[in-house]
Image (cartoon, rainbow, N blue to C red; front, side, top):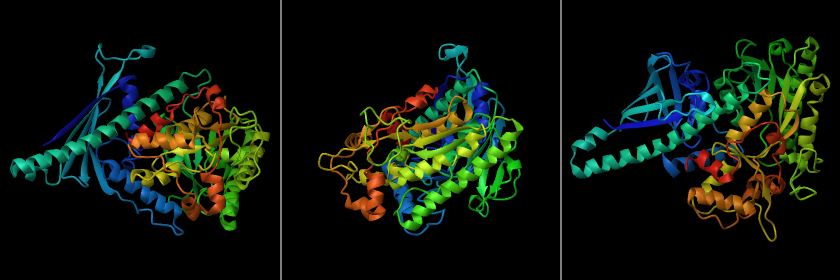
Length: 519
């Protein structure tokens, strides 16, 4: 039976590392966005707990299929079912556990004939220990025994068939190497993030944090990052949606449109992260514009008023609200001084700028009541699971990708941020009392459109020189959507995020793309 083994040195002690694996969210954080998705997390590591995943095809084929399916869900004028995804279902069962030392999961159903994954945790030897900060290191050993559907048969059929079987095994192990490179970076990054917060002078132990939009692109990863650090997360679930029930446990039912939210359900909350809002995408019809605006104002206003009401008990709480760099307007460029857009700059005058201005203003009741309030003005979030990267990946993988929004004497600025850093910045804002007011959710080094396309092309090993014709995005988004979203020219600065103590995992574009694409 073929065996794949990977040893990963982590600069944290064994107890800390094992505890992270045992908490909710670990599987979500470890699943690469280029390889599949988590459909159901296991309930801890206990023997008998079950995990369900969707596993994509390996390499560029899987990446292309996943991004094309995601793009279809975004742009089609009708909703595709949630199960629509080019992924193979995978169910695994936890079959062994030695707390602090190991756990094992086995595939009970899925695309392979068999799969047994043993996770072992060892104290690093003196020669390999990372003693930074006086902490010994831990070696995580992933030992996988697997069998392809016809692997044993191929090995018995003769030399030619055996070579074909081994070639297939090598391709699978190449894919596993990509995934475990991602997992190693995620594990170290998350543990470093939490260790940095715990070392802060005003660290006050685990917090209770409510999150709206918890099932979304950012929200699902944010909840997993927070619970991985030992914090309690309460998910705000819209009345009538899947998972909505009574205001009990770690789920609270609410109805922003009707103004219904039980204030007492948030009495013990230290912070609320509000990610609610109709997606910004598709044609900007009057109906869509109104839905985008009202969904944000109703959710933000309700949360701000509720926290203002609770503030009478004297407990310090925080509201961390989503916003966007669309605040500055689609033609803001590098700002009046040419040095980049700062949070003190005035809003623009187009539709998205006005939407962001009203969105942020809706937090005012909480701020007036003494609630620490921060607004994260998000830039272009990079992940193949959604957003601009998902939309352009199919073209780049086919070899016909190129810069967006360019033309004669035009090369707009694109302020981007990796999915890991926008999630980290929201968590940082919720957990660190130094963060307040508007904060640009962008990486420190924005790039121009041609440089973005060239870097993406290099990472994917594809051509990237031919600009995307404006007719293509216009056909999907309409002329206004194309102007406000695709052709937007915004060079935002990350100074305030850096000054607050946030440490970016991916300050440079090439490293961010390599991580989220597994390259």
